[in-house]
Image (tube, rainbow, N blue to C red; front, side, top):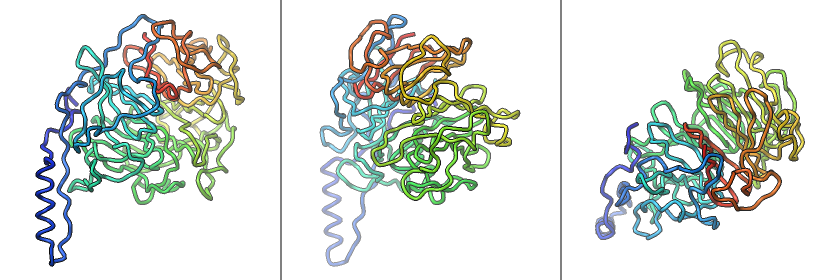
Length: 461
């Protein structure tokens, strides 16, 4: 995927005048004949000036914190703020508005390392890049409507002839995470849609990859599909190096895998004996350490007032890391002798706790992570050298585990205190407010979705 390929395809949208002429012709030809109304095919016009096609400008003193995007005011920018039925141009990053951004993801190197922001209550995925000098936040997908339809900004059905939806016209309901497949397509955890969606940048179209949209547990053992597979609040997606897609099925209390070779979905961690409504309450628990991951229990919130929990990541050795939010711990699943979780015997794929004791709180800095307390950790990331970063969400800070000593320490925020302050100061002196998501770029810069501060922040490497 080369530079510029993620810009919106340059096709011409109908002018308002042309649109009304077509509508008038449809009315005339339909009179007396019972003719059906045909919605003209929708296309997407690119912003008049593309300003976000390069990687973000990220420059600061090592160990200090800065704000990359967001005004701090709760709200979201409209994708068509001027009501011309065209996607708006990118916005200067520090002038952009977010409504509870729950995650920030670094794009692949082929995408210039741009940042993807889950504007959660804004129901949009935003993209942050630059013109080489200044940072801008553009609109990628999600109209801002809390739904699952495909409509343009005037409310007209906009489905493409192949059944896909132009990215700009695809509604999304509280997405929480994205990842990228081997050819650069974006895979989306559409949380409240109870689906996994896929955005193809070459065609600029969105499709449902997997999930019926019914919030329940179902479909294990068959090819993941939109007719037979069910999720309940899928919160996180990540690929391993072999192309297997792992999904944190939050309210079902399990981690599932779609096999690269056969497309079959299966549970690889946690257990859901059955559901009688929203969420697998019988799957909640905290046990199983030292045994097969599929026999262990996880704990995430499940009801209509639930918030995103249980995000996951993989390391280069094929180990799976789980933010076991409700249990206040970070857990790890190691593969068997084959090195691939989900391929070998489930009895060889062992789960352990690597941080936290199962009780909410803040303690343990500079000691063993397994003796520390965490408070509702929502996200986890791991670097190439094995350093594990934790969004210790309800402690309002980011912590890390040293790969050699296994000790835990704070890298951003004053744990236990929420707020907003600290620009270009040591990150451990700053205040965060309920940070849900984190990621790191190839240079080691740490990005933070400072959720209730409605900002994207960075700790400079």
